[in-house]
Length: 84
Image 1 (cartoon, helix red, strand yellow):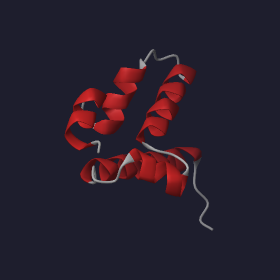
Image 2 (image 1 turned 135 degrees about the vertical axis):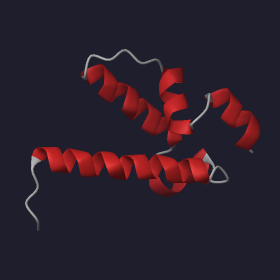
Image 3 (image 1 turned 180 degrees about the horizontal axis):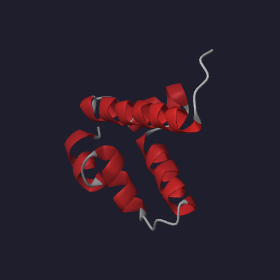
Image 4 (image 1 turned 180 degrees about the vertical axis):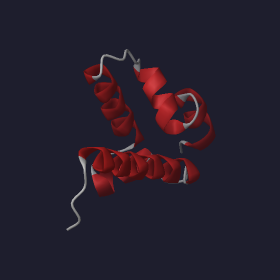
């Protein structure tokens, strides 16, 4: 396995996370309940993990703000457009 610096590992993890979020935004037909059933997490889980990470860094972030970051729009808008 390639030896990575902590900075390289962080950058790669961040890039993979950004790609995951982009993929979920590009596939709104995939419902959160489907994600939960198949993978054990959903967009809401990601937003909660994001908010928790922000809090660990001393950054105040509300649940609606974290959800908007993950969904790419306010959660209520996403639900109205895509939730079945």
